[in-house]
Image (tube, rainbow, N blue to C red; front, side, top):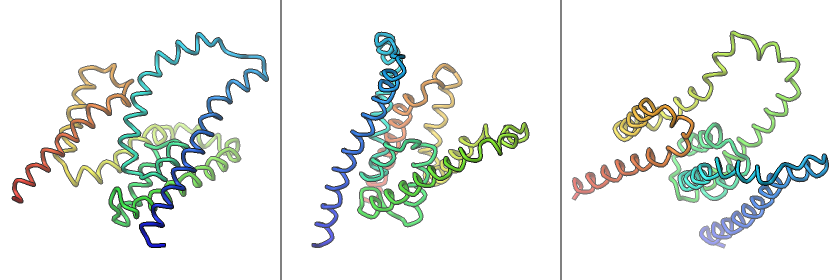
Length: 226
């Protein structure tokens, strides 16, 4: 079996297992509250559940579709299945996969990126489980330290520090493409503060702007090369 046939077989098995585990995970996540409710005799009012879903579900449905379209080309099939099943994409899985991709200089859409992304996200998931297990075991002994007022500012800035470090790596490659969407979103959030509660939905205009600028830059470079 040559490389292309092996890769095709690998992708076929990846999609089969990924879809199967995704369906099982979805059933467990959705079914668990109902099973607990039946056992404890505390089933919620389904009308209230439906109204609650309509109020927030539509926004998150759009966000989930956008995240799928944005992240899947970056992570590949195996990495995407693992990332969406285990969760915590933006904070951990995406930075881990992108860093691994940069280290080996793998390009999106290639077999190398598929393998590297899958391995990096799998490793990240295992490390997360290990850290969570240790955290649960050490939660009580470390509680005085974790609740120390000295450390509270650090905990409040973990996510901004993570995003800042990750963003700089990409901003320096194309400063103009990064600066214009960033400036636009800063001005927009400043003028309309209520939009800060819909940051996932705002990925659509900011992403569209970045894609449009990238396309214009590509067309200009192509004309210059011609």
